[in-house]
Length: 519
Image 1 (cartoon, rainbow, N blue to C red):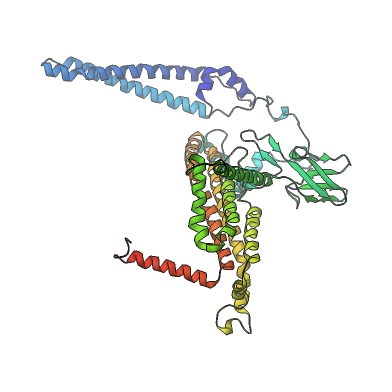
Image 2 (spheres, rainbow, N blue to C red; image 1 turned 135 degrees about the horizontal axis):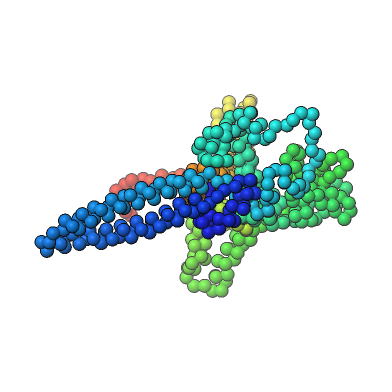
């Protein structure tokens, strides 16, 4: 719905803009209604203020024993005037709303005036098909196929709105799912918020079969452009109908050829940024002690130190024991990296906005590092429990039932790490985007529904973003905790875990005993 303030301040501009859509309108009557409504508002508020002032005089008159009947009669007369003004104002507001809601939206400044016959061709893709029959208008085609319902849309949302029905609603949801997938996916550029026509270009580095290395900016292949290298080789980003969709391909006479891709994509760039952030955070803390800092650091350094000690003292050291100092560099690094990547993913503008831990390739690499650390440093008892576990003999010989299960378990552990981190972070991003998309879905139902959906979506999105900050920490903590447990099971003898269990049992017994609970 058009802004009434814009119509009031510049009616000729709005009138000329609507003429581009072949919609001729006279705002004189609307402006008269608006002027009368505003005058009524001022007069009504003044009358209400005067009525309130006079009503306060009645108790004083009665207290003095004077007659207040004349004042009461005047107040009743003023109340009738206020009621009449309220009714007239309400009627005017209803007329104004019905007038404005029927107006179409303003076209962009560069839109050519007139109908479709005045549209200018900006770019041609392929060849225009020629039919031996009269093709239908796309609106008529959608109505005939039962994809949209214009009549119900106009009744619910006003002029120019429609409802998706049947397979049309399914297609709309498919487009929204496509939007979500594209937004959360990787790419050769970094989107600039609030300016969708611009992207921060990233370097494309490819090695072709027999063509060597080629390095160029992703801006050369954005928007369907084809980049021609100095040696004549041609590169482009494959379209959505290609098996190499969204990837840089080399264009040859035989079709598309996928080169070896070493490009700095959005997720790769985000990985470097997250690593840089972790290094800065750690150096900020270490430099404090190198300069001879006394006592515990304060502010940001103090928060980082508390976080490091929390992970080390409460998780790594109790679980790994003597092996804690050996594996803590990796475990603390992976925690800080995941936490930083998760938080950066919640920031809309650069250097945030990349769905790094929501990319299964990234979480798989992190899980594989834990997998190799677990199995490379594993001791004899770990492999014994896999290939000759302590179970009844008939479960492991002659059919190696338990051995198969244990070997399968070696690979399910990194799979669990991969899926857990990926699914939780991807799910959080999808919820926020879906709540935002609801604004555009409800926009088809008119201004009232659109306005309500904006408020609700923004409130829920803000709540989910705040919740995602907590989820970012929890997921980093869980990944580190599971990695610590997997490594502990591989490097410690069973006696270590039995002693841990015994310590836990003793602590529980002590807490349950009233005589020793306070000791």
